[in-house]
Amino acid sequence: MVRIHQEASITPKPPSNKAFGQVNSTHSSELQRHCRVLPSSKSDPDGNDDLLEEGWANVARLLRVFGLRMWEVNCLIVRTNADGEAQLFCSQGKVYTTRGVKRSNEPRWLEAVPVAGQSFELVGQIQRCELKLPIGSDGNRMEITGANLGKTLRRLPYWQELVKQKAAQGEWLRPYSFRDTYSLVCESMQVHKADLCAAMGHSEEVHNRSYRTTSFRTMRDSFKQAFG
Image (cartoon, rainbow, N blue to C red):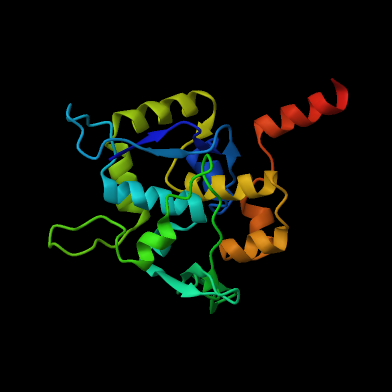
């Protein structure tokens, strides 16, 4: 089992439901500290309900390390890339409608952004069919959605407290924050915008409109460096 641990990824809290609706659900991210999922005892002797079950912990790791949309966890395979290396691949692109025409993004190669130096050996575990993921009541692997991930996280006292802390700072913590954090970490490490968008599976236009490219911390550091 694992604990969702600060470094938490943040999304600014919308000023109101009405105002949020007016921006057509375009979300941005605010990184104070990355969202870190750290391994703990798989069999917690104290029965601590503040720990995330291993299957869900792996979902959180996949979202953060590879910057996935929640449903993309259901579409992951390992392929051999042009360098002869095993690499994670999302086999289905996002379907969307533009001006009444249904379109689909291309399936894509995924690039890992480690968390505190760790990628949790996710590619190897998937390749060996060893990665544990949530199991439904019917005994089969559960289809991952934003709804069931959000429901699982909201049950955790630690997550509840973290949401309150960030709300008090005018920020919005939610499951999609894992993907937001991936984006902002890449921006802070100066990954080329076109390459980042290819890894995340959207256009530069969407990225510029929907994802913040700076944070409170980077803003503060930039001005301190410039003006002391």
